[in-house]
Length: 256
Length: 303
Image 1 (cartoon, rainbow over the protein chains, first blue to last red):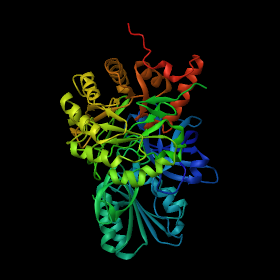
Image 2 (image 1 turned 180 degrees about the vertical axis):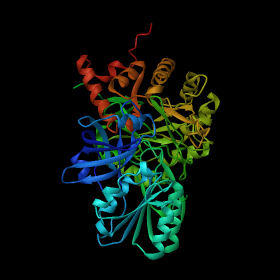
Image 3 (image 1 turned 120 degrees about the horizontal axis):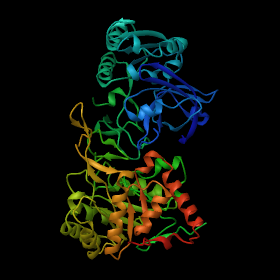
Image 4 (image 1 turned 90 degrees about the vertical axis):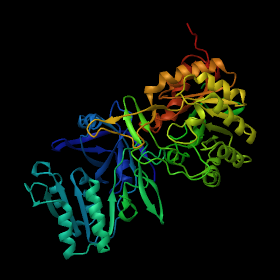
C-alpha cells in the first residue's frame, strides 16, 4: 500500500464539544486507500513532530476523510486553528486498522472520550449489526452519538456523572451486554485502564478483541522505532510499534 | 544541473545526502514514497551483535525546534541485517553504510568480521549512542577508549571505516584526532546531544529512560560549529549531521567542512526531506554557477 504526503484543503470544520474539533479534508488518494482504524500523521505548523490522529470517517466517493481530535497541547491547538479553505499537511493512511468481518457479523465497538472517533467508520461496516458503547465524562462531552445512529448502530451511551445515557463506565455496560449476547468481535479504543478491562472481559468470554493504542510517535511508518509498546507474539515478549504494527492490536498480544 | 557526486574515503555517493542512522530504518518504509535510488546513500539503523529490544516507552519527547529520543538501539541483530535487510538494499542502487553499535569491543569486532565480504560499502562505527548503558557513548567520551575501539575494528575490517562521534564531550576535536590516529578513514558527527524534559504535572521525566538524545533544527548551530572545528583539525573527510532540514542547511554544513551530510529528524517532519534537500542543493548550486558540490566543501571564510 502506498503512502501519500501532501497538503490538502480542509472542506469542513466543526467544534463538536469543548476542545474537540472535527475536520473534513479533501484528499482523494488517501481516502481511496484508507481503512477503518488507520491514522493520519498531521503537521502542526511550526512544530517538529507530526500529530498522529485517527481517521474517523472515510468517504471514498467524495474523496474525503474526517478527523476528530482533542486539543491536548500547543500542536493540536495549531491544527484546531485551521479553517475551511486552509491547507493541511497530511501523511497517510498509516498503520494497521481493525479487522473487517463480513457485514452480517455482530460487532461491538467500545470507546471512551477521544477514543470514540476511530470506531465510527468501523461500526459503519456493520450497519444495524453494530453496537456502539460510547462513554464520556458528562453530557457536554458527548460526541458522534448521532453519527453512529445514522449508520444504523445500536448506541449505548454512558457518562461518568450520569448527565446523559447510562450512569457509569463503558466497561460496566459491556459486562451487562456480554451476559446476554456473544458478539463475533469487540473493537475498542480509549484510555489504557478501559482497554485492559475490555480485553480481560473478552478473554474470559472467548470473544475476539482488537484494541487501538497510542504512544508518543515520531516517523509514523515504523522506521524510527519511537512509539514502542510491549507485546507478546508467538510466545516471545518484545516491543512492537504503534505506528506500523498498530495502532490496532489483537488484545491478546498486548502486555498492559 | 550541478554535479552532486561526492567521494568519502574512496566511497562513491551519487549525491551528498544520506539518511542518518536511526531515522530511516533500513529504508523499506520510505520506498513507499520515493525510490531509494534517489538518495546518495543510507546509513542503516545501528546494529548490535544480537537482537536488541531497546528502552521502555515513552521514547520520544518533543522540544522547541527539535525532539528527544531514547529508542535505545532496538534492532534485529547483525545476522538479520545481513540476511534480510542487506539483500533488499542491494537491489536499490545506493551506497550502503552499516552502522555498527556493539555493546562491547568484542561485539564490535565480531560484527565487523561478519560484514567482511558483504556488499556493505562502508562501516560507520557508532561510539556515540547516548541511550544505551554499554557501548555507545561509553566508548566515545574519552579519547583513549575511542582510540582503542577504533583500533580493534580497524584491525577487523578491510572496509572503509567511519567513526560516528558524540557531541557530549569536552573536546570533540581530541576524540576525532584519536580515532584518526587509529586508522579511521572518516568521521561523522554529531550524534544527539543528551537532554531531558519533565512533565511538570506528574513531576516525571517524559522519557521512561529519564534522558535522551536531542536532535532537530535546535542542534544545527552546534553541529556546524563542531564539524568546522573537526574538519580543521583532521585530514580525513567529515560527514556532517545534526538538524539539517533544508538544502541551504546542507550547503552550510558542507561549507563548514563536511564532504557529505546525513539527515535525521527532518524526515519526521517531512518524509520527503532528503529528496527536497537534494533538489534544493542542486538549485542553489545552479543559481550560484557552481559546477560541482565538491567546490563548496570547507569554503567558509572565517573572520
